[in-house]
Image 1 (cartoon, one colour):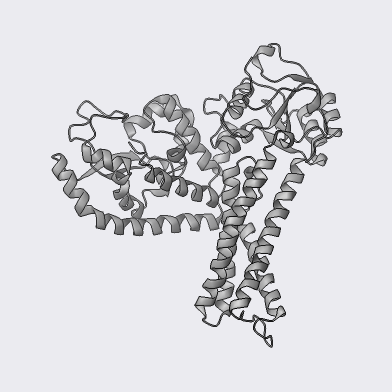
Image 2 (spheres, rainbow, N blue to C red):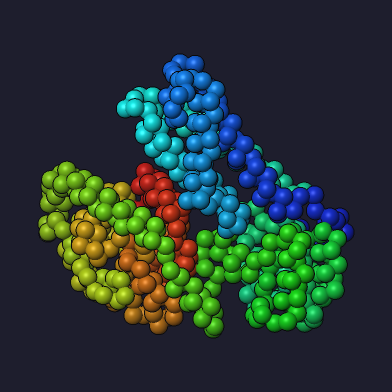
Length: 484
């Protein structure tokens, strides 16, 4: 029997009414964030009013009066509402991932700062220094206090006493594998009580959690408030018994996840790419992206392409000289890759290998690859060999964020071994991406399968917050010189 690293088995003390349900925790988070934001707004306005007179929004109001402070306080509250609407930091997908939850909260704060700053600039009568004074004071206080508050909240939520009591509905061949991977991932795991099913599994050694009974046992535990979360792990979630279990749980403020959904939100990758029935996975790739996100993605590509082109012009003479002095051959390296919807295009890179590196055919790069030149090793460590791909972004062949484009000689065998591999082509390939920052370089089929899980997760969950997270992780990767 496989034991959980951080999740104990069911025993009597756990079968008690939860102190705080998942709904209570979400309410505490919303109230805490809102109180902190409002208190910080009031503190910043009072602090600014002591040194400078706040400009009135409404006519016939004296600068620095209580009515002016009240108006600016209301504007700050409205700006916070706008930020929350943009970033949606209280979506349930952030409840299981602390880092993503904090990042979405900071995105909401930045949205608020932009909105509030626009109001300040409009009504400050050209006094730019006053606007910067108020905004910078607020940003300094809220960014520090918000991070401290969220750390305290996460610490309390992850205490053994407050972990969500979780029950699995049904079992299948992947249940135990995925549940154990969740609990051994080094992340706070739910308090797993066991699984319920109308029939206990024939082989108990295949499961690492106890059998609790059937539908009657589940209903009893729900009625007594012993359950905070349900994980639906059956092959057919629409069967009548499972539907009845979900209906019983709905009025009791219990979070309900499918096992695949819980795995994705916790691990940042799709659950399985080898499943026989891949239709439910494929369906999720065709969700319509919002117009706002499409505009954000296009602006991100164009801004980076223009800034990257300026950087390329600055560093090109130095890098070109070093490449020529290190080894004979061209400065740039063109290579055919498979792009959006299977279109072939030529990717541009600084040459980092010897000219005869592929005289025996294409092969995956390996750690300490002997084909890499001395200058090429430095360029790869800093990811500078990819910088010329800003040209591909300007030409519309690539995006800043997306799955890495693969060579045709690699794509064909990977599509045969991994049926879902072709769905990476649903979006433009990227210079960086979720798989690049979450998984190591792929030099084999199993490693490519792991990267595919992350790529498919990004395609399913594209969002402003996820893009910001990828950009932060990419910057960290560059500073750590983690390329090879």
